[in-house]
Length: 167
Image (cartoon, rainbow, N blue to C red):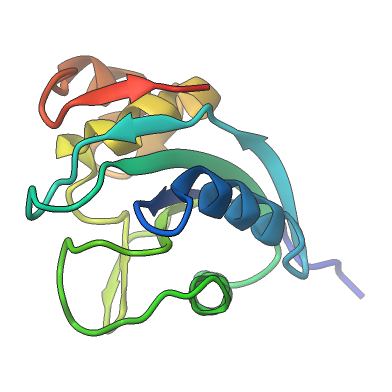
């Protein structure tokens, strides 16, 4: 019998409610405990201004690198379950405050635009709160059709939205 293949995946983590630093740290631990998944690396934490409505608290963001035997769809379902367990309520509001947001940024070199799953994650090239932490752990990862993370991070604004490394 052939062993299942291990696939690299990158997860963006964000929170701006109910102790955001604690939410992000707890999410990292939960992700590391997923079945058939190994947490390989994690970035520092960053504080950033919200991308959406400005009348909400700042976000705490990070990115983690995984190796997983789960499919992209199964991994996404597992991430959504972690969000639910940490109090995330999906009410249809976009870019609003949340206890936890886990985004499957990339899954190997897979490109897909299926219902509920788009890879790579849309808008990465415009999000400093994704690119800056991601370059810490995988600067040379190449997004399908989008260049490497270091190059994308070099081209993104370091001030809009406002962002700072907090540890």
